[in-house]
Image 1 (tube, one colour):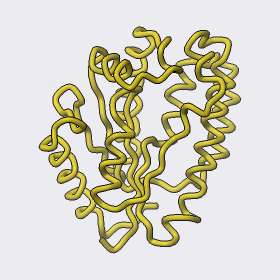
Image 2: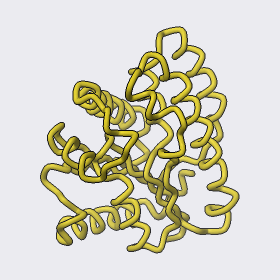
Image 3: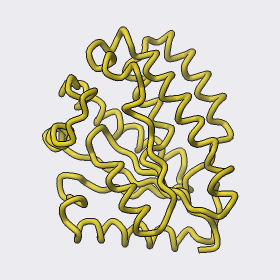
Image 4: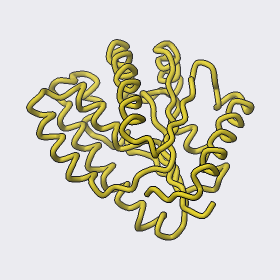
Length: 215
């Protein structure tokens, strides 16, 4: 391709980010970077009492994602090893804006800006969305203990926040293609044709951008 791709998969909780990132990793022989979720000691408490545990939860995620993404250049891209991650670090602002108080968010945003100013940028973002019913169904199927108390209202609002954030990202970063896929229409886990459709569209996007290294 002439450059080293860095792909991120994004979307609300339960939409299938990790499953798709793994499939892309297998298909293209990319290194797979998975976000730390279950290891967050505050997450279960967060879903029980968002107001009480939001700052601790978001800071844990930010610090861990900062470390993971900081290692990408050292361990992968500098060695011409392509990477697919099941998240983009901008998701931190989506969650923080929704859960933190204005004062907490102001402090959080300053830390976020400092930590992410020299982060590697993806060549392509895959954005998955789905209806609330689909998200709730998939969350129930995967059966994570920490997610059993997720409020449907919170999840619905989170989906709306994601739509707004990804649209804003497209306007601010037109140089980074965003591939959108609807999880209600595509089941890439159970339907091989749906997965092939996504893989082929990603391959075309990578080919179209192979002359530009934007990381």
